[in-house]
Length: 289
Ligand SMILES: [Zn+2]
Image (tube, rainbow, N blue to C red; front, side, top):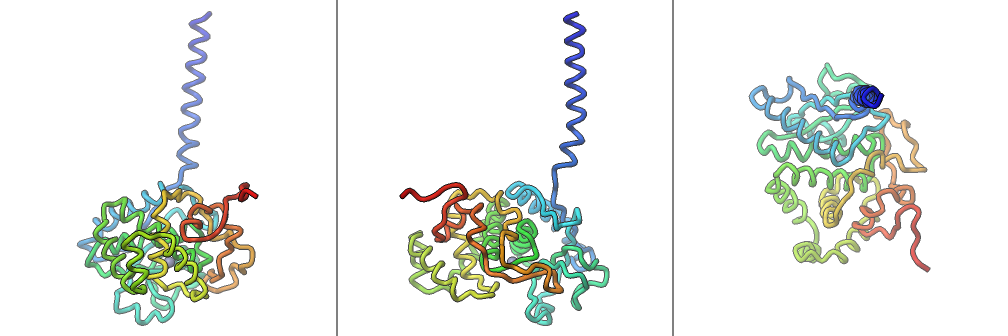
């Protein structure tokens, strides 16, 4: 009797395990980047695709899950020659595109409506490829239909973290050096001394100059460095771009809107916001009276 019962229990456990394997396979999600064989050079294609897989795996680890707006299981990624970026006008690569039509500079085989990346990787330092790709995947994780200086800063911070995770600290240092050099001398000195309080004040004071600017890389790079000065939980970044109560999404033909951040609704990332100087407490908490 006992052995029959034990046998039944073992069978039940095995059945449960078998039932759960397909469940896990269906619910887990892996971001898959498909590099374009036409615009990436054939000789470096296999290595770049291998690196792209490592970048997407790392971001899936940092920010698990996918946005419901993202209807495809993979993201097509093509390369624009650095000389072509001049012709792009305001639409400068690297960029995430989800327009319902094909933009003039896009390859003929691009599927309109599908989320895709245009990278301007110059083919010289693979760190630049990782930096651009990680930044764009971070946009997809946060929601590609809304952008502003804060979303750009968050995407920059994620790309810096991926460079560290992939052992590409020399490229990160190169990037930090180039961007930080454009900030005022006293800010650079405070950064070298890791004097965080005045840096946070400077970053907050600079917000008023941003408006709808999304290309102030020195400002975004400083913000990213401040974010990484703390232990960051990147997981709540999933969908954070949609936490905005006054943004008319889908009104633009590019499926894209530029809206100021709605800080009150972004309290799910309160620790990150705090690291760049926002005076904000997490949901459910209040400052002691
Ligand atoms: Zn961006």
